[in-house]
Image (cartoon, rainbow, N blue to C red; front, top):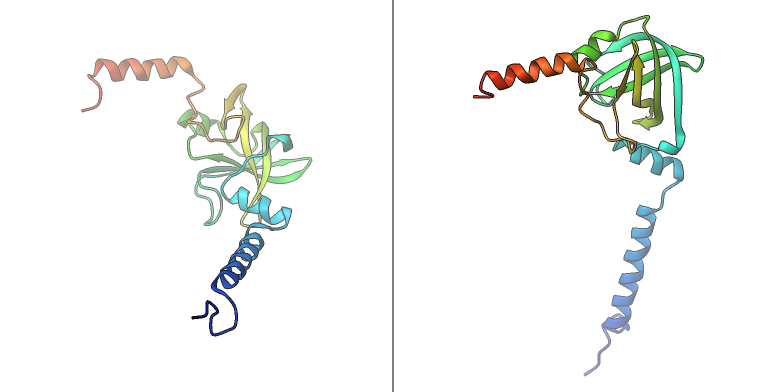
Length: 168
């Protein structure tokens, strides 16, 4: 009895060819140009601290409900020497911080530009507005729950919560 298939190749040879074929398909799916790889990581909100910039400008518009396809959460359009920049602040801004953001308010922002669905956004890490410094993201770009810039008011809320017996 012969170990050759009807195509004249041994099962081991066919299996070897299959492995080579699958490996080449896998490599072509993983390998992509640098700009496509960067856009893909940006879609998952990658943050490149090595490319952080500091932007100083004036708020032109506050966008609390961004268009579909843009990062979720609060955005401010900031006009400065670089032109108009869409700065993403995320969904965790305190009410006090949101109240401080108005058209014409000067801001200073530290963050990294990222491309999401073909549009550039400044992912804000630190926002300076009205004498307050607000940390929006960790040094690695993870969004943080932003605390009230007024610690006295937070203590009042905390003490009121404790005296009412907590959540029921």
